Length: 389
Image (cartoon, rainbow, N blue to C red; front, side, top):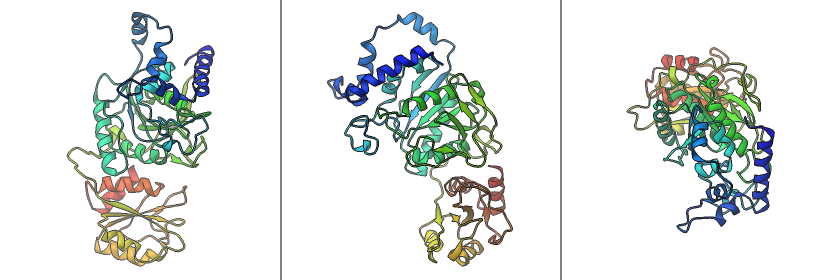
């Protein structure tokens, strides 16, 4: 980790950028004639540069981390430092991986980071997640790569992380991060989250722990983490189970490890899978009308996750859910909208043939169910998968 003098220089540099209108102004003012922004490179060149030989020598022995980027807030650039709400409409292009690294020279002291040539990646559907997982799997198979970082929007980090946790077959560190505020925002978390993610992906202690979410100085397991606040920085938490550890200034400290199967021990393979089965979620509330589950079957759903009230009650959908199970129209898994606790087989609302989703959130239960359906429609076998993952 860098010393206090280095941190002060970095903060002074970022403050100067903010006073000039943020990173966006710096990048726009120094764009190439062909319209490609390279402001970060120009700024770096304006500073005295050390000779290449010592820099190359210093880089030897550092972990090599591969950086992949999707949509989201972290690389975004608002119109000014207080543009924290509508930065998507700022008109400023999102920063590339190389531009972000140039604004964070501290990263070069802790890892050799290679920016993926396929950036940015889409993730608006399961099919995009499938393509991303295949790419990450390919990257981590390289002997030249020690770990990977994926940057994306916070809204669905928990889903992407869990999907990669189930489908990437490597014990190398895989870290997902994002930001609640744009890169040039006042008190942005973007810079530190990116730096922390690289540190975590390059740490030998992170090996074998599955996909990890690095956010706000904390480490959470992909299976258990969820977003808990719309705008606050302390948003990713593992509620009743607790975080895995901390990414502190002095070191990375782990206190526990994930227990369920993941990554290198996962039975799920995307090789040869051209598309994933359609799984939908039925969100239960007091006013849920009969026919919702049947409508999902009519839309082609091969699996339905019931986001039940309490410990599994489907309310007005009970009869049609029972009929769907008996007819085999779709596989039905029952989760809960509560946020903590397990769905238990044999309780008041359990129907033979249902899959109990344990403590998985509805959105994560849907991911596991769609992967399970690539292998089997046998409910007993799918229940085994939910018990193990």
